[in-house]
Image (cartoon, rainbow, N blue to C red):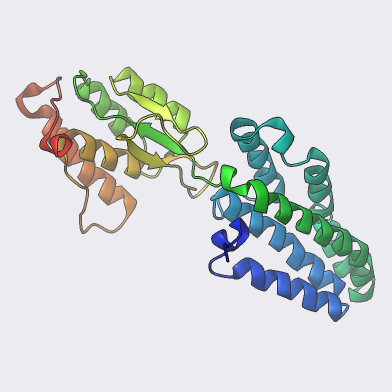
Length: 273
């Protein structure tokens, strides 16, 4: 029997277990806990569908990203209903009010207040799950950029090194800013559309969630990929900590770029394999 998209993305069974926890809490009439579980259930389903792990802080952010991907990857008649998205955000946003009632009015009042909310939210969750089973595959991808092999292209390595020396080793740069910078240095860079690139042989750098702020391109991933693209070398080393690793990889890249005062980077053997 062919598995559904939901079964495909929930290989660990985490979402299924959370569903069971919600149902069990409802059966025990623990409506407050059922509501909390259900909020987490909606968030978890959106995260694994969008392939973002825990990089987005809330349900509203996930649904905004889902809307963006629907616009990019699906015809209008297949988009998630704006009404459903609005209703989910509205119900989930009541969490703070329910927690406040638990704190000040006691558990009975909080439990009673959560009954209608969790009843409605679970129905909305099932609607969302049904939509994801039909169309989730189209929005299930990681954001990032692709960099084509620099064959027959002149790369300004001096400006590249200046740029890499100027960014913090722990920084997370937006895909657009990285694309703009690398394009100036002579690279052919593309922001992935619907998780895909027009080039089959391009190098890929995926966005990650940093210690703060929005997801983006890690400085360490960027400098490591530059080393691989220009020299064919990998960035394996024994350093612990991104700062040490970044400086080590940058040192190796800088040494390569400064040899014979090259501004022209020829294709390496790595590209000829």
